[in-house]
Length: 126
Picture 1 (tube, one colour):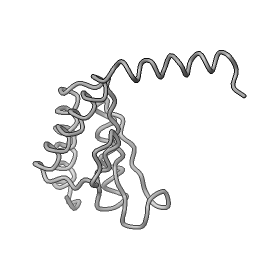
Picture 2 (tube, rainbow, N blue to C red; picture 1 turned 90 degrees about the horizontal axis):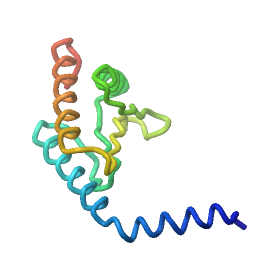
Picture 3 (cartoon, helix red, strand yellow; picture 1 turned 90 degrees about the vertical axis):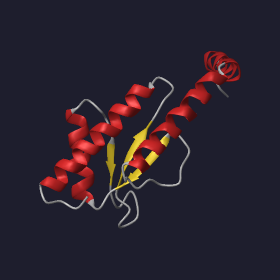
């Protein structure tokens, strides 16, 4: 059985979920914005319309380089590699929340483009 404090916290959370539809709407708008921008710039995305957006990479080296470049710009995105994902399924795991703004999405895509282009200039595959 849960404690009275856990029950009260759960009830409060459920009230917020029911009341704050705007959070889900904002989150969906951020995801759609990211997908449109990322696809326009040639990034390969999984078919996901959830707040978790997998961006496929051409191997571990590219995923790590992109994640490092984003971290250097203050953007935390994890590189996910086998065995966590299948072989040849290396990706960045981009996660959005309702606390993000459209400008955060724009900054992320711009940083991804810079990192990708820097990798191309360094002789890595796009």
